[in-house]
Image 1 (spheres, rainbow, N blue to C red):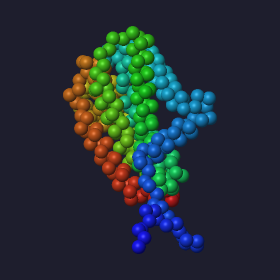
Image 2 (cartoon, one colour):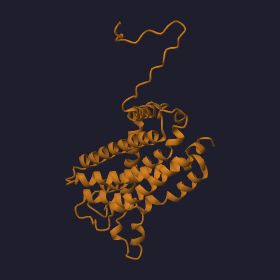
Image 3 (cartoon, rainbow, N blue to C red):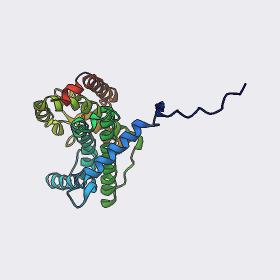
Image 4 (cartoon, rainbow, N blue to C red):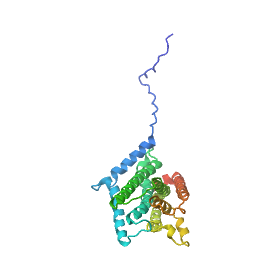
Length: 278
């Protein structure tokens, strides 16, 4: 009696060979996220000569011009002696919230054609836009603060962990609200207009040009309900040791970020496909 062969016999003529089960790709989601980031880098501002570099040049130039403009109005900031540093430390956490939040809000619309492929999930699209733009804003912040300190020859004792915490709080808030808005912007275009109108005054009430602890006691509690104000004030405390931090609540910011992010995921789960068909 012959022993069984070690290898499978070749299929006879006319027989259909059994299809091999494809092996799962490792780190599939990470590969998709990186591909989406590279796609955005390649497509963003491709019509300009600076290309993707414009993503860094534009915010740096905008903040520099605003700094020069407000420096002509007032030379004595509420904290310290240098208005450019005071303005940059306030406006950059707000920029993280506004710019990154808007990018995440438009992630579904931006990646809409790719979301028809099974390999690309809406979470991948959100993560790619958040990571890329958050890193850009952090790089802009480092460049601006380093530039101001070098140009004006300032002696600043920076609490780096506190500054990083302020940026992370602003980023968490941007991710939460951006996720909540992502499907609603596609499903209800009028909501995008309403959201833009409602958030327009935020730059004036987030403590960028003033200190919240200097406000009258009758109105100060209302400012504390603005979650964007807390990362701004925390960033100021990282650069100015005399800043009051008693009213800053990272827990409140994280609660708002987590709540909006959770509701955003629920909205994506229930209405994502319906939104794409509109």
